[in-house]
Length: 354
Ligand code: ATP
Image 1 (cartoon, rainbow, N blue to C red):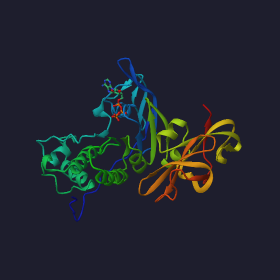
Image 2: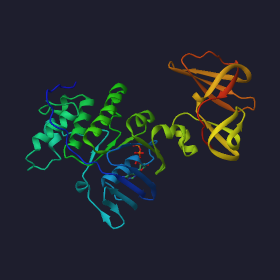
Image 3: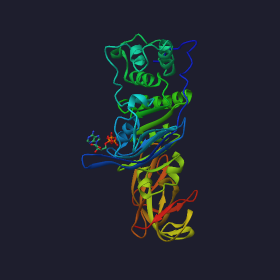
Image 4: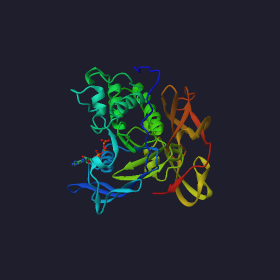
């Protein structure tokens, strides 16, 4: 529950700094985990780092925080090189805040003392900073509470307040809400956006949940096997993925064989307009909602998956290829029905045939 206060202290004033990570390498033993990872987060922006389990997201975050030393590459924050060939700034001097999956509050300290933990003892504005940070996360008035009396969502808000209290220029969040239920997670991720925008801090938010990455991030960086494959705003990632790997990892993608002829590709679904001209054998990426299904034709509905808000037809084309077509709401076609599929919408991307 939020506690209403008539006047909140001002949010901690922060000048967000850009985070630029380049060519990071890190191995544990002989197992390479970061393999040339690069990331570019403009000052005051929030980038979601999205990738499957084990791809190195946490290691990348810990390397930015200075909790790991990279084997090669560079971490820059603003004008400062924090990790580089001849430099290593220890974590406590980086002015970077971190929020982990587990709130990790000190159980024997009050909420207020937890938030004060990272502040200099002699800071005359210590109490004000704690109040401001708690107000910012919607927990004004709870400074005296014991962590054990908080809900999971409140505990994560306290962890966020603790990270924000010293006014860091960068905040790193590692799957901070993955232990919470879906509605609370949805609420808190919007909170993070608001709070970071209010403070001006730069943020990197790790998640393996695509929806969360899209909602939270000004931009999304897709990571796989120790590399960032593409960093872009969510719509660009979804509509114009730079590689097959990104197309298949972000959302649902049909990859349809075709032949590029400049601005279009000839495919079993007809001519599909291309975002960039292509010649020769290609695979055209078509999102299922871009394929309109109409009754009658040479293709056959093989199966229907009904999700409530939408449904997906699995359709076998005349040449034997199978594609997915999405419709809003309840499906009008059933398995076994004859169907025609037509591409609709803006030009899409094609990749060289495998
Ligand atoms: P998840 O989403 O599951 O947390 P992740 O993308 O954050 O995964 P990392 O936690 O960075 O991935 O781990 C990447 C790989 O590095 C894993 O195989 C992991 O076992 C290994 N790894 C991470 N830290 C260490 C360490 N300190 N020592 C040895 N191996 C490690």
